[in-house]
Amino acid sequence: LTSSEWNESNNNNNNNNDNDAASRAINFLTLTRTLKTTKRTGWIMRGVHHPESIADHMYRMSLMSMIASFSNGALDTNKCIQLALIHDLAEARVGDITPHCGVSDEEKHRLELETMEYISAMLGPLLGGEAIVKLWKEYEEGITEEAKLL
Image 1: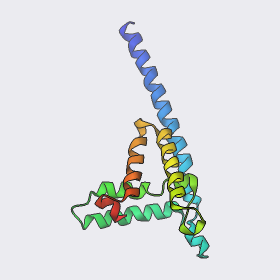
Image 2 (image 1 turned 135 degrees about the horizontal axis):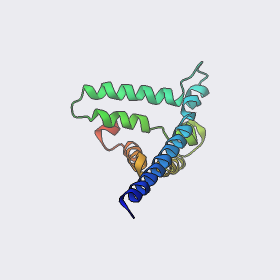
Image 3 (image 1 turned 30 degrees about the vertical axis):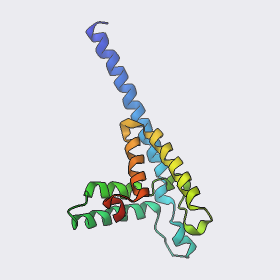
């Protein structure tokens, strides 16, 4: 290949990667759109008028974890915000399962893990799919101080 042919080939590959990344991002954002419209199950079960959505909850948790982390210099503020954004992400596909829904903790965890792995594959490594699953597992395990905060 001449250098111009090599550059053109690389540009085409980069365009394909860019198109693939854009398509993956759109698929992810389309899936997560349901978080804005799905109301929290516990509030609905209790008859709360105008209950918050899952996205409302995740946003507020992000703000709460941010300001709480500011008062504790040992906490990683960015990690706290990331965990808050990720902690209920699986609900985009499985819904907001409460202890009153008749689903065992084991089954809920299985459904959510399956969804997080689906999201990871959807995003791929370029868009942080593996990092998102790692953050979710950190939250679920509750071992780090940041996960304990949430």
